[in-house]
Image 1 (cartoon, rainbow, N blue to C red):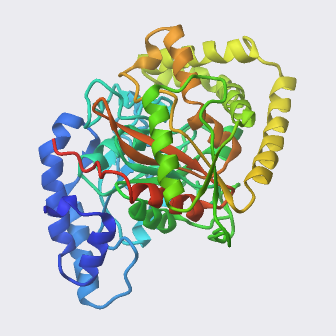
Image 2 (image 1 turned 180 degrees about the vertical axis):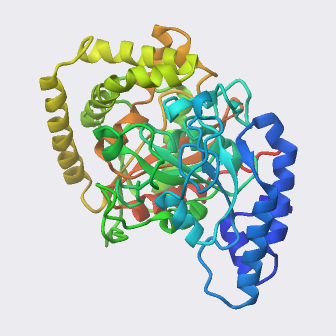
Length: 471
């Protein structure tokens, strides 16, 4: 087995015992990047000499007997919308194609403290506002499973790079599925933690647009990985209690595991989009595996998830409306078309331009939904949902026409409902259908990351291992 094929936990353990060196691992991953990145275009900035220098320092720390972090020597990619000192910070915009970050954002600092070796910057759409990963300055990222289907977005470069074996872990962020959806499209594990677990603090000078309320309250960073164990390790390495973040938590809080069996509510359809046959099959498979693992599985109807998904189209898009002149001026034609389509969909739900009363009531309704869902879940129940009502979308499906955009947004209700509510969710693979990965989403109560990761592990233990993809 090549070193680039190892999991992050295997790499960290073998570096710690000096069975392998960080330099050897980084060289193996750099070789893999040279082999497959020209086709996939997942990483848009790679600095081999700097990565090798960091790896040499990691090996010196091992030899000196220094305290080592959980990701010591593990190669990681980071996203072009997240500040990493002196590295590309383009946000997928031609006007910022050569912009460099002045410092590390909090989640990057946490990864650095955990011992990660940064190999490259992953691609994303302009302003990270699409479920597809293409932009004018860096081009299109392809899915290693199919060049005709999206690798997901906005963390599509992250997902493509991990699925193809360039790095075992990637950092991403999520306000509408941008971690969970790309992970699922590429056959990976992706976790969006409870808002506040990982700090959203940005180094001075990083933020070009003042973040509106929905961005502050809903966005969170998180990892994409090939295994649940790697995702768990990376998640808690990234967890960074930080009161500079308006929604940050003061401690690395984890929910206690319930004393009895965990109940699983299967939510297939909330009335927004009929699930595709392969989506239903993935749910059936995951439900059966969880039953085998002693989970108590039952079917649920849960309209509040539809309410939350509809609120996403109201609150996020109304927060973005004042910024449209700037996003239209700086973004590419694909983004402008996609945003037009999103507003057309929102108008069917909320009217052409909702007034301030509808906006205020929307935020009030959100609070009610959060309370109701936490009461339902308690400490011993999680939800099993689709990732999307459809398999991975065809490339640029969101900009084809209003009808297709409407069906696409409706299909993404599992991706949009979760950020509105701020609960943790993980997507985990279940297999393949028609040559594309299939998977499911698990949603837990607030700060119940370990509980949903345990369920994801039970699914992974019974599922075929899909990645790294052999191109």
